[in-house]
Image 1 (cartoon, rainbow over the protein chains, first blue to last red):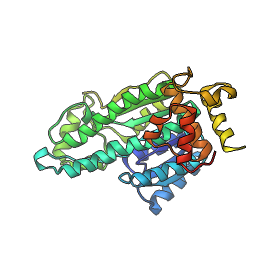
Image 2 (image 1 turned 90 degrees about the vertical axis):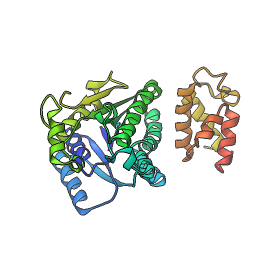
Image 3 (image 1 turned 120 degrees about the vertical axis):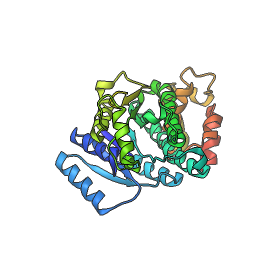
Image 4 (image 1 turned 135 degrees about the vertical axis):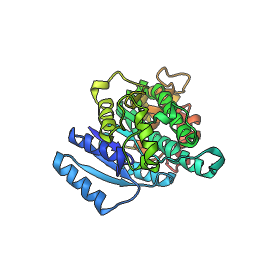
Length: 241
Length: 78
């Protein structure tokens, strides 16, 4: 299985790389920029698991860079079996305190960049007549919260995109699903104060934040033939709410 | 293989029609040339010629003749 993972250098994306590599998948690990730590970690992960992992660098706010990055993957000439659209940014802010320009930028990364990647990769998958696309949604796109107008709206858009694409691409053998994580222990979530994190944990039935690998394992399941009849679904992974 | 042969082959592969029917192929006249067939056909042609259709071109691509014009706009000689 050959897999593209965007936003692969930290948080859930990093766990995705580790989980997919451990299952024997080859990976194009997409990130914004090269760092020695990132490349060293990719090399070690690849060697440990006996797979190849190729770094691909592009900025998600740059349409031309996205095109070039994905084209370089296509030019590898390998089958692209799975696309995990994980790259995203998060902001918290009431509308009265938010600049619309910042919300536009968030949508550019969380929604439009994802569309650009899918538009290119799905053409390749349609040629192959198989493929799996997994988009990262969020519980914030399902449950309205003050301060989440930008992030929540962008993730709601991602999840509706997922359902529409599942209908468009299903006839070509391409499954499209999304994962909607609840609060997950990542650097991104530490923009909140400790008392907010405690509240987030207490709102889950399991009374704790999720772990990145708990999301990655669901992605691996969705990518596998075990999920061969699951299409157009939003899988909430939130500890129960 | 000439470019026109490559284009005809794309139609044969993408729409599963005999090569002798390719020149008269239109979206309305070929059973498999629906929105799904369109996507498959576009992907095959893009691969064959190393080009990328713009969304407008995908919309305009409703016949073999239209396909030839699109390729000409990408400076491909037929």
